[in-house]
Image 1 (cartoon, rainbow, N blue to C red):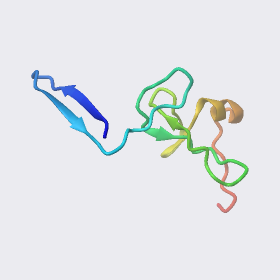
Image 2: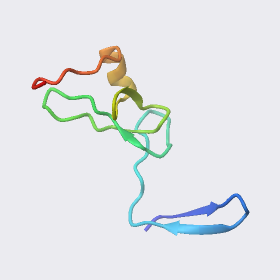
Image 3: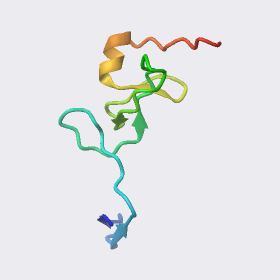
Image 4: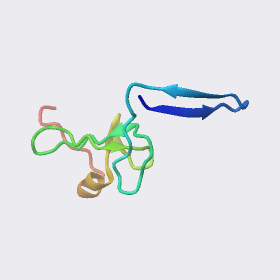
Length: 84
């Protein structure tokens, strides 16, 4: 069980223990907590699902983010839904 120490603005300290670690950003050299996943649709029909921090998640639509690799591949264009 991973535990993380913390300190509040008023100086109070504590430790929070969780049952599992929060995923980290998958961008090379980045170890920031992940708050997003890449929504680029792969040829298999599944999404990329790379974990991304706020600095590496590029918003391309409402609640839709691309990793830096897929942003470069698509030029930032949102993928079209085949059934729309």
